[in-house]
Image (cartoon, rainbow, N blue to C red):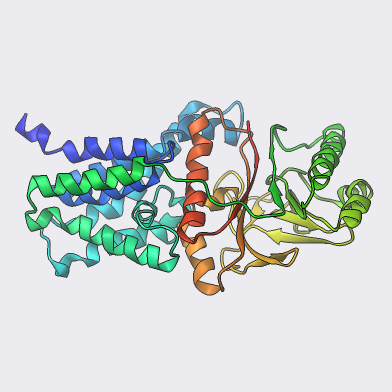
Length: 396
């Protein structure tokens, strides 16, 4: 029994991962650092991190099986779930040290660095730094620095032989902040992000024509509302964007947008001219001109598969902001919502944007928490930098 008690941080890590992601209580993820520091050895530290990531990403088995192909075995989803969690937990196991002191402060910092930047950063979801940064949100880089310092301090605290009641009090305070509820990010006046329920990306001609008509209907209803100047539709909403798409939407949307002096941002797959390869884009249309806002990253294996002719191309070093209707925007397309390294890079290399635009395609979601967990990632960035968030989603 005494040996089993040594593993209690792993059980608590699972509870923290479960509670922090999917219910709007993201600051609870800060408790991970306290539990990791409490672990007596590297084995327990690894199991604590593994339990945290497995519980936080619990939706992957079912969701991945549908996303990759509707007749895919559930075993593929389970395999992806286990492998991703095992890899993300690895730095936390290798870098754990039972001794405290400033001389070991580099260890939690290094573990955070390794799970944030590529290659592990390519699946770097559930980063507990978002939890600590939300303890004091709205201050941008100050919030992130405070979050990093808090993460390191919590990691080293148990090794300093802090009394159990003090550790418990700190955990209780963090829990109160977490369960107090995280308000939704502010909206952007004149901007409308639409939630649709249109199913998979259209491929057949009849389905594509129906989607064009639906696009006209949705954007028309939005721009008729007083004060609307930009309408955002979800990722991959149009499917493959070709000359027929451009001509059809020029006819259906052009006069309406020009009359209202409005803009539309519509998700599509833009051919690159290299075989069947495409770029994942938001097509910006003002009634006269089309211009693509290209995604920087895409889902590995399913969309980004550089070995295949039909891969979605990526450009992770393109960290610029985009101008839409006189505003500068940080744009996040679907899987990018999870990528801490990408968002951090954008904010570090640019002046403060006016808003965040996040477009996603969640037709494949069978478990409601899957979309909630994704939303919490991009909501955290909007709250940390106190920016309006315009969210467009094609929900299940």
